Amino acid sequence: MTQKFSLRHRLRYRFDNALSKGIWAVLAWLGLLTVLFIVLISIIITAIGIGPNDEPTNFFEAIWLTISRSLDAGTFTGDQGNQFRLTSLFVTLVGIFLAATIIGLISAGIDSQIESLRRGKSLVAETGHSLIIGRSEELIAIISELIEANLSERGKAIAILTPDDPIEVNDDIRSLITDFKTSRVVVRSGKATRINDLAQLNPASARSIIVLRGEGESDAHVVKVVLALAQVLPPGSQTPVVVQIEDSDTALALREAIELNVLTVTPREVIARISAQVSRASGLGVIYQELLDFEGDEIYFTPITDNYLGKTCGDLLLASSTATIIGIRSAAGEILLNAPSARVLVHGDSAIGIAEDDSTFALDLPVKVRNADSARTLQPTEKKLERTLIVGWSDLTPLIAEEIDTHVAPNSELHVLIDAEHHDSQEVNDAVKLVNQSVVVQHGNSISKNDLGRVLDQGPFDHILLLSERSDYEAEEADSRTLLSLMQLRALTRDTPNAENITAELMDPSHVDLGGKQTSHDFIVSQKLISLLMAQLSESPHLSAVFSELFDSGGVVVALHPVERYLDMGKHTFEDVIVACRDLGVTAIGYRSADALDDPLALSGGIRVNPRKAQMIEFKPGDTLAVISTN
Image 1 (cartoon, rainbow, N blue to C red):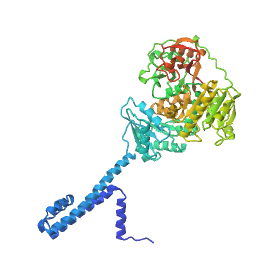
Image 2: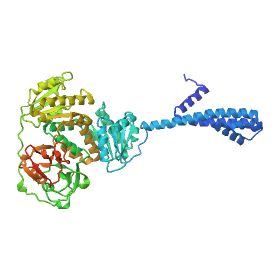
Image 3: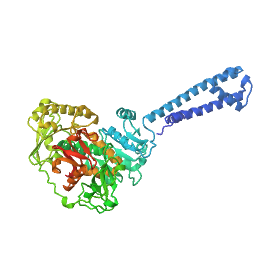
Image 4: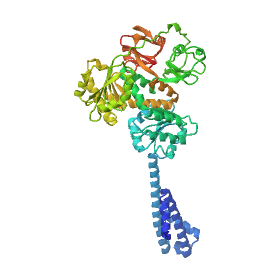
């Protein structure tokens, strides 16, 4: 049976609906009520004839009298006539009530709008901005790098869409970054999978977009964010969308299925490869960071000039006075790092080099034709039996173990120290499948001096790698445990061959200084490396293929080789180094020497990347060359 409603219920229902529309709807109702009140009183004054001195007045004069007494409480004190005074008093009291209500509502509306702005609900009216979607541990480091990238452009904005409280996020950013230099940071709140929330950040006008995989979020969430972006970006958009995603198959499917310029970063694979390489060669971590961050030298492209057309890639290595050439991009877009020296340069090719700035990268030196007869074959170093110790277990451990496995001789050993409270031997054996190494599982507490000492007694170990126990602890506690383990290992290995073979992974870059004085190979800051890579790709998407070559297991590798493999000890220019490496099929990008420890241009550990060709270097036993070679 249909329920019937009274007129009172219907009016109350409509009134409630009007109030639910917000403060401005209430103000509209109050305005209407005020107009009705003034008209009604004016009609009464005109009809009864109770104007000033209780004498009749016309309707328009009555309206003026009512309005003036509603707005100014002191006006009625000068009125004459008892009836008119009582009417004026009543009008003034009602006017005070209405005015106070309207002023209160307007004040509340302004406060609400200010709070809405602080809560990040307004439109981002920016163009050419960097857009970051989501909040993860990499957020602060990415913002810091984008600030460096924006130094040459004043007023560029970094807009952030986060599901968290924007006031909290803003305070967190400003507590960790004190100088924004030429950049502005704008934080907005919303769900990235909602198209309306996403549109508030004006992604269609963004210079680049970074999609972060927040804590507790899955790859499925990241995929939905990219699908939402596909709805708000114009068809055929070339805006780089850099996506943090864990599963490599999902990453490939995303690149293939979405008609956007999607660049994916799989943190576990990148960190696993870098960790395995850095643990085996001190100083590589510093070199990777130099190539990825926006300070110092970076990787740039420049077209091949006419005088080098028809010449070879070997000739090209000596073409720039300010940059170190590391390869070419062919006219077809193929990236060739450590390109074959005999490969002939053609129109459309571009040189890839490490330079201080793109404005300084020029092929400004005359051609020095390479003597093909000088080419020799670099005899590969024989893989050796090695014993590696990994302290700590995480989802990275199997990937790192597999990467190490490609560099060692059969019958090598991999010892893994795990906490029996969280993991067991069967879990390790099921996860780690190796060809050249046998796995020895050790049980103990990674911060216990007795347990670490017991494992070290089974050494010596060629390499020791401390991994962050990210699977078992929050980032803060995991880093604290890693630092404690490092302190214990330093004490236990002091004055032993293992003292220089310890590498530790930390999550938070701010914790590096807590480790005290260290050499160039003590730390891998996984969070920062991923942040640097994502920031670089967002600003320079054309470098995606270069980084794929560097970080994919099938690509080239950055390595530190003994100087004596290429040159005799003594004084040589860096041009001599490039020629000697070129003739043996590798590309020199720098060196590490004891003499460079005090060089203000050197990185930590006496490492120089992209030195001038004419720079004279005196090499001594123990010095190494930084090269790019085939894997």
